[in-house]
Image (cartoon, rainbow, N blue to C red; front, side, top):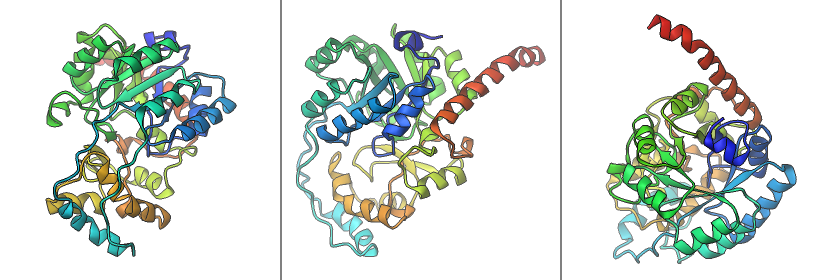
Length: 360
């Protein structure tokens, strides 16, 4: 029993990390919840209507608590002064896939206020966010709905700022985590602290519960995080490798085949630093030295490439957010089986600790 499980009525301190763009589905979220863990809708790329639809689908499958996640409002991207180099870099990918020449995308995206309004009506028990601190009005609206509020920190400085802003819990995102880096106070490099070092420092610096995220895929990692003072653990890549996840089959297969050293942190995909499985798109773009377009403009410019790669089952040009826990994933079970396995492994580790300490 931890502060998290008590507050949310969970049986296990296990959270399926939001997988925006990475394959969470209502079936996945509900399956995790039915085991007594916490599932999340990664809604950052969803329209308000899609948020409503996904939430209804989750509620139709489970009465258990679930969470919803959005990006904190990002500054409106400035028009790039010279987008030519970035477009020139992705042009060969377009040609290789038989696509028209790339062009600078029109401004788009889904306004945060509209996404927030849909999330508040979702029936979710937990609201989490990354990329900064929510506006005070948004925090007030979330709290007024009785939702448990979680923010993402990659440094102690960020954790302290989020606690002052009023979050109920903090996600300590270690550098091993897959997907976007949540750094917002300081440089990208300053936010690349490993999970094992970051979690206890944040635990010591704040009074709210801290959740560990990054490079954890089994019961051993869960026990280690709890020993460091965490109240729970987010598992992301482990849940991508499940039957219910919507990630393409080639992505799931690579998660079983790849090991350490198979990921890279790059801004080439979205314009924001994130950890992905290495592939031709990431490696060739980074090697070229070409600049990237502003946040999320970069991904919009390459959207045709990613869509074509998905349709053709082409892992070389498709972004696959993945953490450094790859060598710990060996099967593609159901999400409920994953939770049960993590709990079983954790109990086995705890049962064996007295013997191991005597031998030390």
